[in-house]
Image (cartoon, rainbow, N blue to C red; front, side):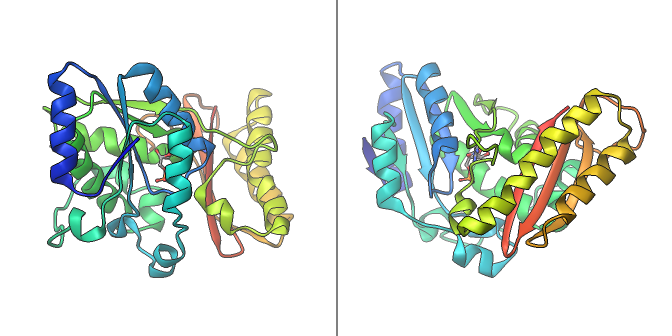
Length: 281
Ligand code: AMP
């Protein structure tokens, strides 16, 4: 496995590989890697000759300074895990390499960036678009892999690519959420949970699975939302930030009581740790 710290060196290497006919799969990450990330790398390995993973905790997508400072970082363990899982190339730049000057670009993508995560984390998606567009230009991959764990993020990246990078040949591939056996969605933030908090966090996926059950049995929108709110209220460690039932493509909030083609997106604080999850209906 090769590790690159500079854009110039990475581009030169990828150019060589491309010239010799290799296809490139790319998985952008912020490190503190777990088996959720690895599931994306495995898919990339299957579909491409070369798998590239970037590890970069992107400051421009954090609207909360404490969240950025507390974001887990563990490069050596990340390299080990990637090596074991047949990643070919890691790109792990410093902030100054990615942003020699402040990135002032503003991505105007409308509704998809304004609801849910966009509403509660102002500027978050603009930062995501800044870093992902930059990485897309550097890597020029055939395919880029993203997890449905960040459901809205995939919709934003597709919209960003359509509007701002129409000539980019990179295909965006959406991959299923990887969960612990308990149902808890794997997340780098789970490392910050105590054992007791982890028990509480389990209620998040449990309530989504139950919500899908009652949806399948014919529950209305209000019944599902009430059910989820009450479920989360059971545990005083948990505090709901939002729960939304949204159109699975546009992510606009659904208002009809009977609906289909929807995703339930939920964000819950488990004490100080912000956890997100979702389920397709
Ligand atoms: P992050 O390092 O959190 O920015 O995540 C990097 C990529 O891994 C994103 O596309 C995430 O959606 C994806 N990812 C994170 N957790 C999971 C998971 N549990 N299952 C599948 N993909 C995931």
